Image (cartoon, rainbow, N blue to C red):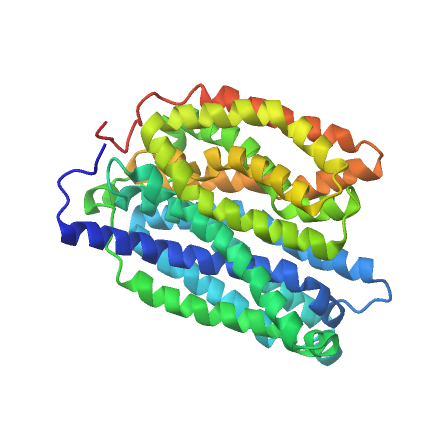
Length: 429
């Protein structure tokens, strides 16, 4: 299944387009996660309180607000991409992220401007949430449209390579700063540095994106239903519900074994926080490297088979893996178990944007992908940690494992509805 009829120039053009589109994705996620990793340093500056838990809860609330903006971002940018072109949407979303990061980097503290400080922090975070909400659908759409036929799974997998890469870089920058600066310096001004880095990186990505070629045609952009909710639901309600169904399980298991896992290792398995950080950094790095391999696998066995395997294995192994991690003592063993879990997750993440893009025609593609992803992700992905910790405080931690398992079974059932052949992005099998 080689890619057909591409000249050398055409191939390199398309590969550059993939790099340009995914560079912004890396920056977007870097900026989004830097907030989470730096919160312990800047929380006191914006939420003065004697209780550090209250400060962290406030910053977590602002983090959650970013998630709630995603469906709105998915709708606005999806509409923009379908009506005004993918390229415009990609440029505006990365520019907004740059703006959000710059605001946070330059924000006066509570001591200087009182209640305006947390209010402006929230505003910056809402701008970032809108931006990330718009980024996913447009990047997934653009990358699926520009990818070389017959190798779509491989090329589209770079969306998650850069998404995980953004998380890893955020961790790395924070770790480097922890080596160079003292705790006092980090709390005083050091936490601002990653946000400056993010804003500068966003500008570089903007330059790359300016040179991208548009993948949507003038004809589809001028369609009167292009990018409209009516156009999406009049003909594609079934596709939208299918995407919601497997994205709910996909987002939930992704956040369970990535962002929540670090806290789980510390709170539940009783691992030292530093060891948990090492384990997760290693596991995320392996996870990132796995994406192209699983993307290539999907080019061989088909998207539907990949998705069915994901649903089935996730249903069978979630409870045993989480139970084993509950009592794990060796960091190496924890790393092995988490990596196994992430292999199952990779069956989905490597092709997640592509599977969604293949379900919608070009005039509502970015909207369909972006909105379905953002809604499922805000409801099931963004809430994973809250649900897990909430059930743990009630002494019902195991219930969470079964909740993830049920959602994986749901993902399996919805994957059965996937067409044998992509309905819209035609393949050359």
